[in-house]
Length: 311
Image (tube, rainbow, N blue to C red; front, side, top):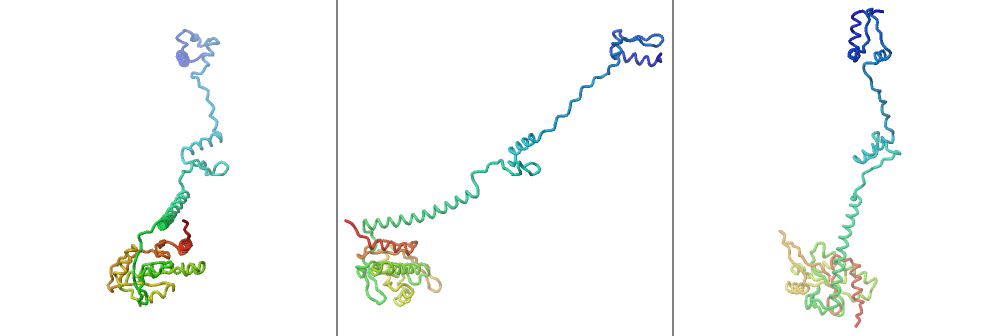
């Protein structure tokens, strides 16, 4: 079968591009238009012009274990929550990877309670040590508090420090128009007397409460009589001239200061709040502060009045 001349030229050019025409191995075309090729050259002609690389199979999808590991790794570096994107976690239980800090609301609350307890304990311990120190001073020596004094009672009789020799006394300085502190301390002394009368009647008979007015300008005998009706019947109320009261207050180191007067002439008197406890010789045995309860005062009184010294 003969090829047309145009087709023969196209085949010849293709063979030249593949390198066969240059080496003289290109098949010759006969005058009759037929081709003669060897077996090897025919195989070369049949080869494709370009060689395609074999296609690699796609990588397998990551397993569930690998996915969880990656997710947990991101969690540890990020939010600290091991929950997955869908809100679920391993086993259905949410877990936190961030460790809790050393400070929490509960620990702060415990610290606050401990601090308040420490402050309260300090105040109580301070008062206890002060009272013990005062007791040691009294037992080892005579303090420079008290001394000779003279006043008058509600009947106008002269009363001195020697009047109560042979009895223990509870001495308190105040004034009849005191709105709150003086009545409170007076009531406390009354409770002490009632408790002693029930539990230690012999000691109660030998104990005398005394009230000394630091406002003699207004606390007349009549005013003190009306004031005394509201308190324990065993009280002895004393007053005197301003000089007498000032002299006695100075010996007991009692602070007394008149406050500013109001438009109607009324005023208050600032003064020390201490109950002085004297023995049957008139010497100071102890002092009771405002913070002490009646039971504390009773305990101290019984301890002092029943104390037997050893020589």
